[in-house]
Length: 245
Image 1 (cartoon, rainbow, N blue to C red):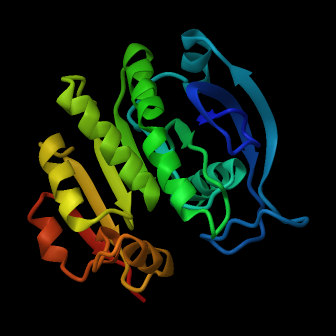
Image 2 (cartoon, helix red, strand yellow):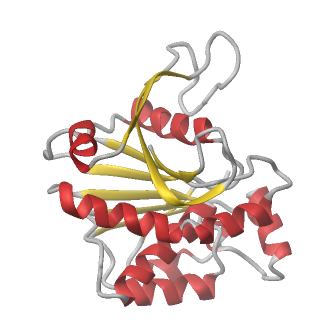
């Protein structure tokens, strides 16, 4: 885990990155896709050790191989544990085999904290850029970036800023799950970071309640993650999957 929280349990924002090498226990008896966090049959942290040097981070990630390093950027209303557990769930349920790194930004972890979370996502851009720069020094393999909801706004903004500063990140894959981004803003971001990675996937679902609230709060008609117009984003270079219903 890489985080710009003051500590994993804190919602306070920091300008610094802290790294943790973690083992996550995944319960056997659960429905695929579920992430239970309470009770006897819950996800848990089996081991957590803070690391600080590039050498320690490199050892934690292991050697580069055929499978990409997956960076996960969580979305709205997540504790640090929930963010990491979600990545562990995806690994367990989909068979991801490469190194896994959760970028955990300071969410308020409450349904009423949307504006706090949006500010936190924007504040975390520099920290995510720092992570990319650090990985550029120690990681020689492919990288796939997976982001969800407000995490997509954070990820895209960090990629845009790095491209505009001629510090472009080379990604093998970019997966955006129900982005909480205005369509016009998103198209400008895509133009700024073009060309897209060779594997660019956009997952949408109409009727998402969080995206409805976001659209209402921003006085916009829709968000990218709830689009009905797949062809609009296929024209930008994404493969689009609609999970509505």
